Length: 251
Image (cartoon, rainbow, N blue to C red):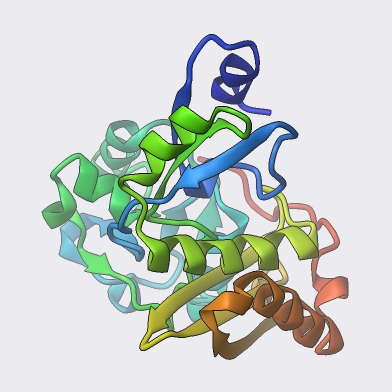
């Protein structure tokens, strides 16, 4: 449980604002996601030296990320480069690349946008190249489930389409039992009352990636997430979720 949730439960605060991507997919008892405002930038972005794109990095280049999801997809796209762990806030990671400790790093484009430095990205990666984490680019307003006033206040800025899409993404992640060490990705979008949900499960080393998608009415958002899990399980996803040792450490 994150600290803000603890503060909610002890009545220290009435509404918590989270990056939805970082909120556990299993809701804490007694709390509710009262609102998900309109989503921001959902993509991942590469920041590399010399203005390079991922395809332009030389063989053996070192790309930093602390995310198994990003690591798996980078390795699948460029098996000839090294993916290494990187830590620190956005400024710290960018500085490590500029100092030459890494040739590039992959970050959430939403984080760069919120800092008003998205133009520093040398490439915004397509959804086909890099499927995002469940909830990426979205905020969540969380309140005590029995606090009607706080829930109503938060709901005044809710975006139903974003809320529905992220509910499906989180259902996909939750059903797989994915945590921070699992290479799992999901992205949903609503158009004309139909929800399209894409899901990905990958071996962290990137040698095998399973992708599938499903469509259905928005009223069935969570069940669509569950059904998509059943499909990727049939494709062999369970075997890919077993933890694997990292083959590199941060330089």
